[in-house]
Length: 128
Image 1 (tube, rainbow, N blue to C red):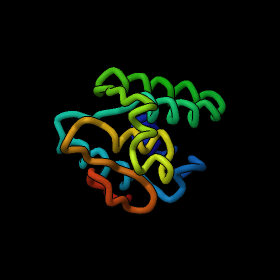
Image 2 (image 1 turned 90 degrees about the vertical axis):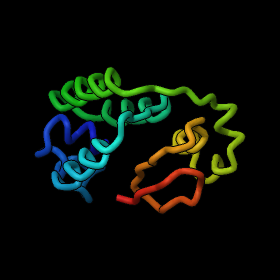
Image 3 (image 1 turned 90 degrees about the horizontal axis):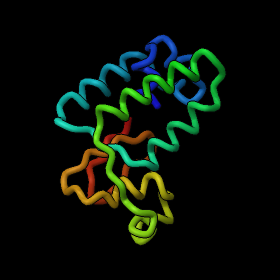
Image 4 (image 1 turned 45 degrees about the vertical axis):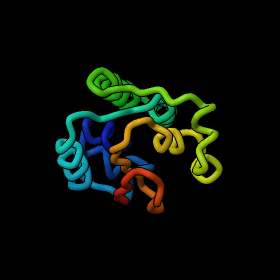
């Protein structure tokens, strides 16, 4: 959410109801952190959840968010982890489908950014 809203218009970050704990500096830090990696991986689950949350907005922000999301989809790598694989992961009951799919990714070195409690699963979590 922070990446999409900030890339759309940094002034919208603090006005966004789900991002009130963040500001433009947080967005800049996120962009800087992501800049250290060759590739950003996304899953259909995270894209769907992001899309659903942005669809709750009125115009013109809604269309602007979707334009930004479309651009991010075009430049990032989408990986599919099946729901069957995800639900077999021990973290499924605790995290749910979207976040457990991130853990179940087949990549050995994955940076997971989340706003919530730290995780001790097989990837690195940075709490924002």
